[in-house]
Length: 482
Ligand SMILES: Cc1ncc(COP(=O)(O)O)c(C=O)c1O
Image 1 (tube, rainbow, N blue to C red):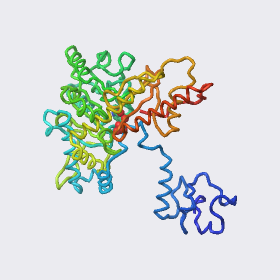
Image 2 (tube, rainbow, N blue to C red):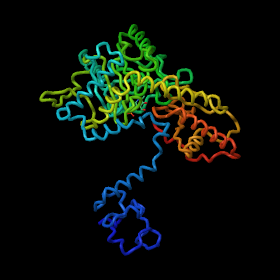
Image 3 (cartoon, rainbow, N blue to C red):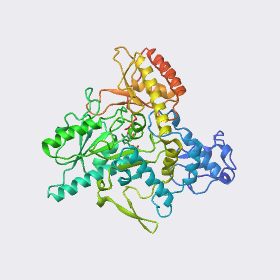
Image 4 (cartoon, rainbow, N blue to C red):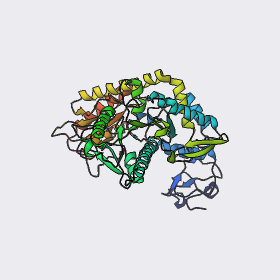
């Protein structure tokens, strides 16, 4: 028996509420102590934290222990840092439970789930104006990161095959993107040996907008990433403008460079509330688009999508076949097993809300974001970086004020004391001197909650303004990652 795993039998001779001071009852630091209320006869009273307990426990006890630990996490609905869905309705919750055992890769065993997956990405191809949605190709993924990797891999393979055909070297591929890309693109370049070429953002060029692109693009460029909803700020990159810059490069050099749109958030916002903005397959250089079903697709975590304009745009050499209804079905994914439930939830949301429902939900988030940014703009201490007009996400900075005793990290901490999770962090390279704080408005963050937030924000600022000396700042660093 492990030292940290005592049983009721062992403990029967002692009092077990940890108050008697008996040496055997001392709290063991590497164990999870159970409140006596939940300890039933013949089961563990302390679970070791780092080894699997020797003996079994009643489900009620194990449940309570895990539940209680998770209870100490932040409140998901007050988490204004995440883009990921934190609320679904009761029917979705029911469906989730019913489908929790479905493995997405078992296409032969779960042919209906497989069919639903294919319906969903066809719907997205249509939403994103693929010229012939039935001739597009796509897949679900575990999230946008995997979807972006697949988009990047397709760009790389196409570039490589074209270079090999022309008998040209293929050992130095590069990918051009903003310095404010999400970390998944850095990972892609690292994992798949592609040189990342970051175009720095600045106060004048807050997003990748096509300026100076010719300094970065060359014959080894596998593609350009355009982000619809930059993670740091929520701003859209002007895909058409980037495409026009690439047209000019092609006229001069003959290089035909493709665009992958990382629409992790905006891919499910722009079609509904900015329908006239051409950022998708309407722009001819856009060959693939990815999004997170679990962000503004309004599904719980664990779902992304990637779609290519036409079947021919996904190199055949990347496709594997899995068995399906006695035949074979093409797959292109990094994972093998993956939850199928989220795919069914996405389909549920498409049916449940329809285009009009999505438009209303996204518009509401947008209105709440604009209300919040308007209120924050009016406060003396802040200047907006952007106002939430693209995706319902915005960031703000502190104004200069010489005798101020606090910064945005202090404000983040104060807000946390009231339950609100609102990250402060530095902007990317070349702008790291700028610290911003950001709010992501999602479905479920109501106008009422937004008013309550503004009230709390004002009271936190008032408290901080009343400080006579600066807040201690040793080892202060943002724990927030993009
Ligand atoms: C622009 C962008 N791309 C990719 C990702 C990665 O998405 P996921 O968390 O779904 O893997 C994010 C996440 O915030 C993002 O904002």
